[in-house]
Length: 382
Ligand SMILES: Nc1ncnc2c1ncn2[C@@H]1O[C@H](COP(=O)(O)OP(=O)(O)OP(=O)(O)O)[C@@H](O)[C@H]1O
Ligand SMILES: [Mg+2]
Image (cartoon, rainbow, N blue to C red; front, side, top):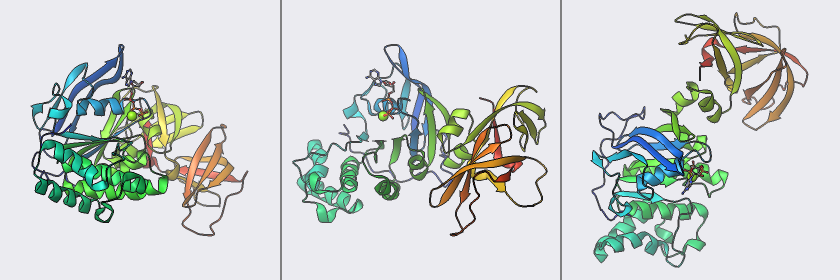
């Protein structure tokens, strides 16, 4: 792939909010569908990705992330829909004619070649001069900080270092679009976190547009300007990390991105500035309106860290205060999670930040009041 060497693009980066400002997206995915034996693995997906943007496809196993990426790369031909790159229709171009590079989870480094030769490999195929190749390889080695290890073979490198070689090799040909399928999947948790920072800073320095596939929401949040949440081949929500977490548009997104308590209820009162949801556990007062009719079924999404536990004589809030009992507590270091039973029997998770080293631990069975701000509750209608 990537026999086209195009000038490196670094202009036109999306700004802080992440959403691209340009009218026409750099990568324009239009109603893309892929069916295998009549079953849609990717189902009418439309997405616009800005130039220089890092865009994450996030979703559970089997939701169609890799299939979508493989269609962008040209390894899979769509059953329907189009892909435009910088205004040009590339839907029917073979992979090697696309100015796109894909980095696989396994890295697929050549074991018998040194780091230097691995990075040079694609450049040689394109037929660059020896001098140009050497200059480019050295530039890439410096970019991923592996100059000192240029003579080593892949098996003499750590997982994180191998990942950086694969990245250097992918970037050597200056792709206009870089596709990363679970790029950090082979790394252990601690190394992943550190490598996410490095990878993001390299991609931003180069300014390459990037589509990243992951099933790890923290990785998506850490790396991406914007995230598309997929399920069963469809995009459910596209937005910056904060929007997806704080304003999920469906039960699936609320549940998949972060921890959440979901409660069923019905719409009891609906005003422009607030609504009341009736549930088996009591009424919840929420500071936003809902589109719908009174009596319709809805779900409440309550994030564990937004629930407060009150165990002392303290003035209770006017709304959203419920009697409860501590079921148990799990200590996670930076936070603890309490499971708390409401009078109805429903069990909610409540997260508590351990900012105080020897902070009080609420005992199992203790009676508490569970309190929620009206603005921290999200009502979901789908
Ligand atoms: N070549 C194929 N033939 C038939 N079915 C396929 C083929 N490739 C993928 N599928 C099916 O399409 C669906 C989506 O697969 P895909 O590999 O895109 O998922 P994914 O989101 O990347 O999952 P994971 O996180 O496990 O990698 C799955 O149900 C899979 O079994
Ligand atoms: Mg996959």
